[in-house]
Image 1 (tube, rainbow, N blue to C red):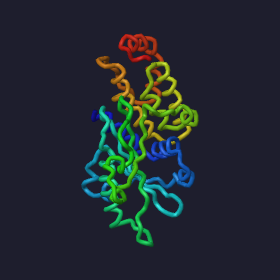
Image 2: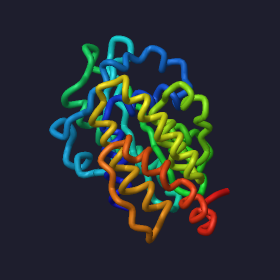
Image 3: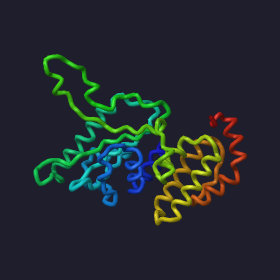
Image 4: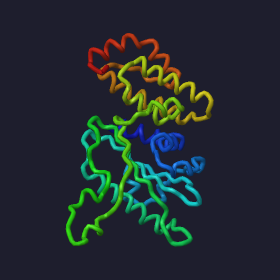
Length: 259
């Protein structure tokens, strides 16, 4: 699903999307101390080749208190749950720490914190272990203390309750709701809300990214085999949906897309 992968990566290459993802879906006390105005994408020149070649992964950093917090965001689109995701994340975070050890140690020689985050939007619910230690056999005699300890934060889109975040104008929540929408009228309302949100901002690049995702991923998935004229702006998307909502509702019913 290259278009899906690339469009999601494009969306989460905007700091506003990452900020809303963390604000809306990380329910931990430390999130209140994050200065989201300092969010910056870690450049390709900063990470080594092993990480740079991972096209579905994005690395950000943001100020947390007096230090940097690194956010390793892995976007997972595969249809099957990866039972060894904890091993993968341990490897990727280890590679990041290897690079940080060369460039970003604190005054006391210690490394900055890293939040490993897996964003998954497959059909089956995620069942794999989120803690690396859970994948290692327990043994007697104190050997268990040497098991690797690392947990990643899982955001399984299909299992999220994003209604409250959407009411608060959370862009990540709006994205997830559109992904799960099974009603053309509901999708039109969501697009209309986005149009209103973006009117009060200068986020033209992000607005365009949403338009590209709707045109090339969302609508083709909802209407397979139907030729859909590509629109250039969210306002045009809203108009198109309004004009064809009745027709598409009947087609979606025939295809079994509505619940």
